Length: 112
Image 1: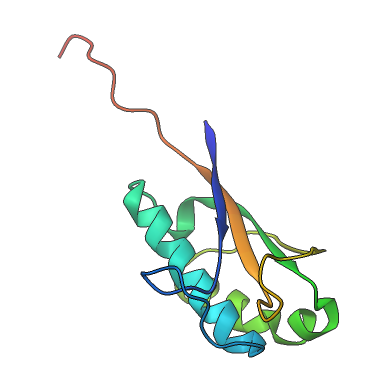
Image 2: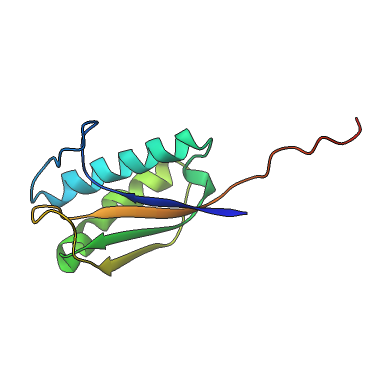
């Protein structure tokens, strides 16, 4: 079974955009927020089967996507990463990151 993790933005706990127009810092923060969303579902990076980075700044994100790829590799994960053009809610927002992940079904209540 796969589940979709909704787009995570580079925002703090109160929902405020941080690192206006800093693509690298926003990519790191959004990926940290995605990791938090994974953990809340009992998952980690190794469960991720695809990542999508949405951005209005394709060239800028393509130039720094290795920051995300390196972080994933250090976690033992190597999912494909897609970068897609998008209009984001805040003019200073450079990225939003979503993922698909493998979710194991709960153990069945069978006979021991």
